[in-house]
Amino acid sequence: MVSSADLILVSAREHSQSVVPLYPRANRVIVPLRQAGRIAAEITDVELSESVTSTTAEGKIADAIGLLLSLRGVAGRTQDSGEDDIVDPYRAPVFVADAALDEIGQATRSLGELFQRAAYFGVAQR
Image (cartoon, rainbow, N blue to C red; front, side):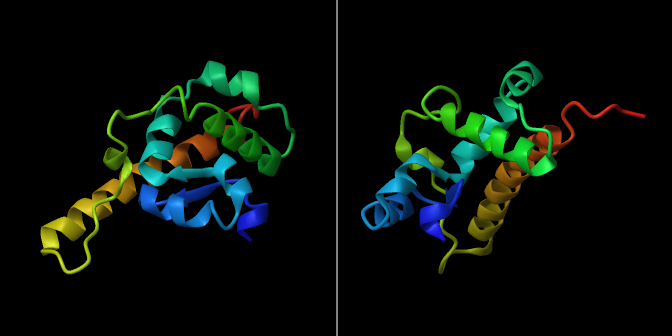
């Protein structure tokens, strides 16, 4: 599954460091969830229009994933790599779990909105 994935989202950079030695190809498609969410939120309609060339929803989403991956080193980058990690709620107070849920929610909403925009790109609105 890892070797054929178009996008791998991880909650902490250390997870990437565990996967890549086993599956070197994963280095091209693995992204911390929070970083992916920031990049997705920053992608403009112009960037999307230049990148989405497929005609099917699945293809358009794949195009959007390609765009997101191409922007890893450009947009949404942090100085401190730990800033991309989702706070670990294990054995922590409830407020830490709430913070982790917020971080996950923000990132997944941004990704969902990007994929929805991509899937409907070029479809006439009623």
